[in-house]
Every structure is written in C-alpha cells, then in structure tokens.
Image (cartoon, rainbow, N blue to C red; front, side, top):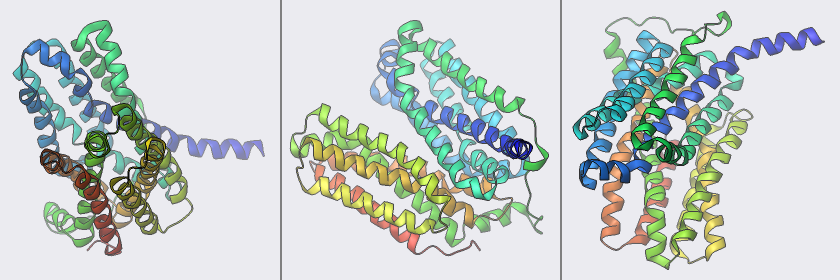
Length: 402
C-alpha cells in the first residue's frame, strides 16, 4: 500500500513542480505590471516630470505588450514555451535593473517598452506549459492556482515595493524586483524535463504554418473569446480604477469605506478563483459556470449603482461581485483550452489574452470621460452592461474552432 502511495506521489510530483514554477512566473508578471504605480511619486519627484510624462512609461509597456503578444504566442508554439518564459523573465528583470541603475528618464521609458516585450510571453507560455504538462483531470485546478498566483503578485507588490523603497530608495526597489525575476527564471532553467509530462505536439499541418495559424485565430470561436477577454478587462478596469471615486460622487461614500468595498472585491475574487478551480474539476459545463458568474457580477454591480446600500451592504455587494468574478476565471481558461487544437496553445492564448491589453488601453478613456462628464452611476451600470454582453459571447460560442 505504501509503495503504491509512493508511486502515485512520484507521478504527481512533476506536475506539481511545473504548476508551481509557472505560477511563480505569473506572480512575477503581475508584480511587474504594478511595479511603477506605488513608486510613482518618488520617480516623478526625482526626474521632475509631469504625470503625463510618467504616463509614457505605462503606455510604452502596454502598447508593446498588445502589439507583440500574439507573435510571441507563435514563437511559443514554434520554439517551446519553457525557453520563451525564461527569456521573458530575464528581459523584464534586466529592463527594471537598468531603470534602477541608470539615471535617465528616457532610458526608463525605453526600458518599460523592453519590459513590455518580456511581458508578451507570460500568458501564451504559461498556458501552453500547463496545457501540455498537466493531466486533463487536474488542468482546471492548475489554471486556478496559476490565476491566484498572479492575483497574489498584484496584492503583495505595493507593500513590498514601498518597504524596499524605504530601505534602498526607489531605484533599489527596481533592482530588487529585477532580482526576483531572475530568481524565478533560474528555477525554470534548473527544472529538468520528465518523460511522463513531455509535450504532445499536434501533427504538422501542410501549407504555410503562419497562414494556418492566422486562420485559426480569426475563426469565430477564437474571435469570440478575444471579445470575451476585452469585456472582462473593461469590467475590471471600470471597477478597480473608478469605483472608489464613483461611490464618492454618487453617494458621498467615505474614501475608507469605498476602498474597503474594493478590497473586499479583490479579496473575494482571489478566493473565488480557488473555488472555481474546484468547480472545473467537477463539471464540464464551463460555459454555464461563466454565464452564472457573469450574471452575478451584473446583478451586484447594478444593485450598488441603483441604491445607496450603506457601508456594510456596499462592502458585501462588492465582495459578492468579486467572488463571482473569481469563480469564472478557471472556467474562462477551460473554455479557451477546449477550443484550441493541440500544438496551438501558445498562439491561441497569446491572441485571446491580448484582450486584456486592448481593454486596458480603452477602458480608461471611456470611464475617465464618463467621470469627467459627472455620470458616476453610468460607470457602474456600464460595468454591469459589459458583463451581460460577455454572457452573449459565451452563449453564442461554437463548440470547436474552425
């Protein structure tokens, strides 16, 4: 009995190590996305630049990421996910160490563009590694752990960066963040391949591989998933960036209360991801889970838009919306995986997750303009509307990519 148990544990160990290493990389990717925000006042004061000029660094990172993530997905399928992920971590780490060491505003902007290149590999490489190396009966839970790790990276970034800033200045914080990236890259580099979890490649297609790949990406199921990811990014952009000011303008909600509501949303979202990982292991009706979660988001956000609930009820409703948001994430990933032919995970996940970048670029323009025009209720109602439209993309999705 104990021998059987040892054999089972040994067979699971490679999958656990792979999930752990890939999740660590996802942690770093989210950590890097938030790297500048908490350090912004110190960087701005040091370089004597405006908020608009600092915005060039954010723009450089996001525009490069949006433009190159799909090509990075093709490279993942061609060259291999592990080597590309190591390269992406090294590029981002190098860029941020240079920011910390070189005293130049324009070098900083250029390095954020370079970090955007590194950022392009995370989603296609992560999902390709998990899809190729984790057994089907565990893939949903692996996706949930991967997503949770990214959320954890976002959560710990502000406090840890400010702590490093207090010890070594903002430049030391950038160098420390770069060392973190190199450490995770070293872990991935040290991992050896296990025969039982080697990638299974799809049969080679005849014709031009790039043409075949783009036909897949431009097929109806994949395009619907791209729209789905854009809508999710628009929803999160509206809630995360504008809910605090919207509640203040709409109901006179204290900043501390509004921030508590947002914190509850983020915390319950992380918990929801783990619950969603359990759900995807027990049902194949991922579309239904996504539909119910999206409907829950729309309901609770519309509720706080229409009624002044008071502090406790506001926090509870926003937390419930966050839980619904987290629960759908593993199902979201499974929907994409089920539509993806073997050997195309990198390009497909790279393409559809570009929706995060597209939504991240568009949402500040829309929601910022709405707030400037004095319509805070419309911010919340639009988030609820995007959630309902996202349900349509789930309901209408074909079963398989063309």
